[in-house]
Image 1 (spheres, rainbow, N blue to C red):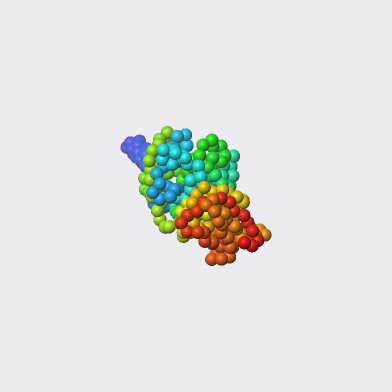
Image 2: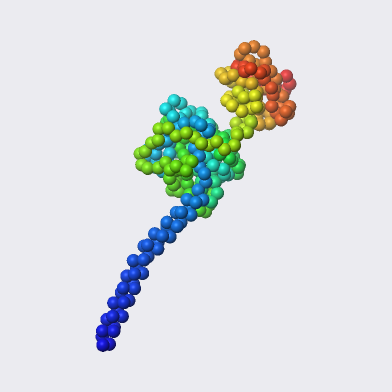
Length: 292
């Protein structure tokens, strides 16, 4: 009887141990699923990092889950604007031999986005610590770094702690609630819904530049130059230069039009803005001056 009792106790212990071991993976799986659900719940409402209504091609190619993006039809993406894809704070702007001019934005709750191969110095439009909105322009598509063609390499990343991430933290990309992921996949036409808010007037003019806008309110097509005589090819109506900071030693800009005539822009008048003749003109050249 004693032998039977010992044998029964051993069998029961073995069964209990088996149940515990069998339950461990299930518990771990449930825990992982719960963590994934928590992470997904905190995901920002990411949108394509391009102006509202524009259409784009998305490709994972060899970068899954990152994306390479060009304008639909790839008719010429170089120099096109790049926007923040969700509200956040710029956590890094830097150069890397591979990614070129690079910006990273922290969106809170462990979420980040990264933007590679930008055309301009990454601190041209935004700087580390700047707050951004979905409509904030952070750069332009370019070919910097190890890139032989104009495109935006874009990543969404997740890291619960810290303020800087790397490619090991990449996660599948979502735009407007739709997931774009999978090896060697492409989406030939995706329209940007990055439509929240209206871009602030004059926001596209980086320090050190003279900027000319097609819109009378300081929005629309913008041409800019860091030096004299840009010979801009676009019709223009108003301008803003240096974001209110004059060229050292100068505080006026004389603008000459291809159609004839000129206008003088005065720093300090109407917050640094100057009026150009209405109806659109083509800027042939401009010259920094002390007075005009």
